[in-house]
Image 1 (spheres, one colour):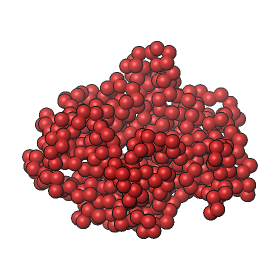
Image 2 (cartoon, helix red, strand yellow):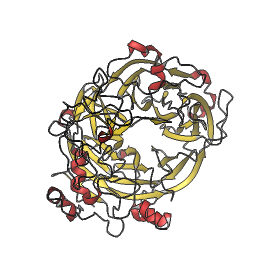
Image 3 (cartoon, rainbow, N blue to C red):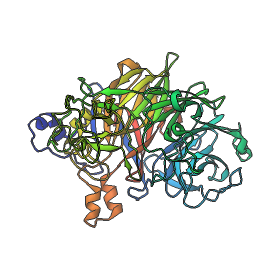
Length: 579
């Protein structure tokens, strides 16, 4: 087990005894923290990092790769820009140009305004770049902006899509752009637009992108699932807030918020995460119609192998079984095939609705106060309401009530603290259970369940743990791997998913110095750039895999965009001991 902190190796025993734990710290040159399975077939070795020097402003959020030009394209959300990085020498990624989306005129006559927000980017193999852009008023309809990724980033046109386009992808055949229009409410919860999925017909040739018309955009909505048509278990909750026109029609459509998209190998079907609803939508791309919505259900944290550390005040890294259910609530979704059978892979981050005066989560110990129903007296959780038990854990107040509404018969935490593999019919094939927390227990010492903007022991134990968010899939030497980014704990966990039901942990690598707590340092007057350089990568948000035949090194690479540190780091995917 190379490059693993010696203090971290002793963590399990130390935690059991509640002894002080040594904090993993980087050696000179930001030596990454690494934890490997016995006989691990591969690991990640940082090659080079591009840094914006911008802290906690989503300056590097999503990353896409264009093989022909050996360029990475990264999203700077609030600048409404996409940065083009030259990675022909991946040890020194350098900025070539920026793609500015504001001021671009769309096919419907609108113009992307100042204050717009870039949320996602994808690049087709021929160099057609596509950016999902949120309006300056996020409840208004947004845009797709097309640009020349193989040239100097010239804008090629734009079309209007739905409210808050949060993610865009292109189908494997290159003919369709698919957009998750999240449709979040206004921050004060005065307006709640409909969530939807935009399906955009693309031309064969990049140079024809300027001819894309507004009528090439179709919107797949959720109107067919209103009322009793919505399948059981799909969560629709919270205040009933009108859309921008003042209409209270289509409550389900206003409540469902598409987050992320993957497209089937045959380019006919899109699978879309509906994170807060804990569901997946299935979209027929030929008809631009939502054909199905299914609930992901919940996992039982009282079952062996599915435990969590639910408290940030128990003084130890204590992953254990507890009488709590977990709502998967995935962010990222990807897909892959094994012997002709397609599977879906999700990173089960979890997310709560908190808009205006409506706040979905509450700590378990606060149930029964301020108008909230209490935990039922006959619940196994009723004797665990202290801070060292379940008292500090954040749970949803929108699920788990007894039928008469008198008390919470079950407690539901938000997020699975795991990644999962599903059939395309919604059957669970594999879930990583407590592996992510157990691996970070062993690897991170006093940084276990830390936050991303500061280093703190157990800071996130009461709320989604390491928070798996980013996810990509790649093939190396005939094996298929899932690379899972941990938004709060930092780093990437690799799993061999070649045989879905026999998925196994391979490695964990974090290019972060946990001895540097950025928020604390900045509060003490430290220089932002110097502090970020010392801390490394914080908050992985987007990951892309580069196969060996498309890589500038002729070896597989991984690119990770980190929204909190404003960095994008390139990794060599290699066998342990090769470096």
